[in-house]
Amino acid sequence: MSNAEATASSDQTGTGKAEAAPAHNPEADRLRALLEPAVQANRLYLEDVAIVAGSHRVVHVVVDLPQEETGGVSLDVIADISRILSDVLDNDPGDDGRPYDLEVSSPGVGRPLTEPRHWHRAKGRMARINVVQGENVMGRIKSVDGDGVTIVPEIAVKKGMKPKQGDPIKLPFDRIRTGKVEIEFSHLNGDGLEPEHNGPSEEA
Image (cartoon, rainbow, N blue to C red; front, side, top):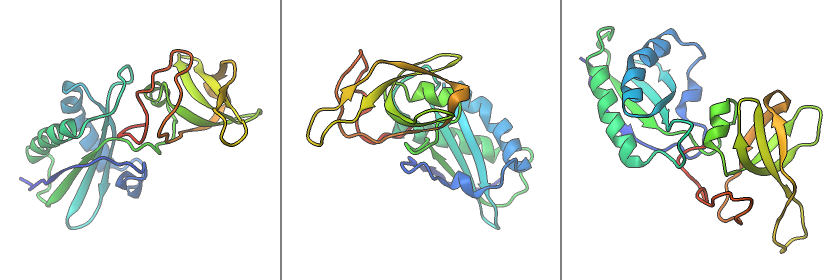
């Protein structure tokens, strides 16, 4: 049995240790299959599992809320799921006995919006979108469906003036090259969008 140390943390930068692990790591894939049922049983989504190799391994797990929910993963939830996943790893039948640390976090605000569920989770937030064969867009994510994203564009105004909003536009997923949430400290209500995402958050 390994000695796991669960670290309740929130990756605010979006550049967590998960990036240090090679893609398609067979051991990470095995641990993902092992941990996913426990994550889902606690109404969370398993975003990523990565391993920083060495004599003392670090297992880095990223969890998020389901795409239909709003808000971020609280630190209390991170702490609870850390304890649960630590128990699962302690009883891992495939464990080789090497010590490890378990680190659990939620996605940072800098996480690129690369999947439909990322766009769902970012609904209501301001995003900078790089468009294929068209002008790039800065705007608030109004709605998301199976085909793409509806954005309320932010129109540039003179410094010191309140920002203006343009007419909503629909961007199909196949026209979006990249998307990234912009960190805000305050913003205006508009088109029924809720100001629940003001300031840095634990998720993107």
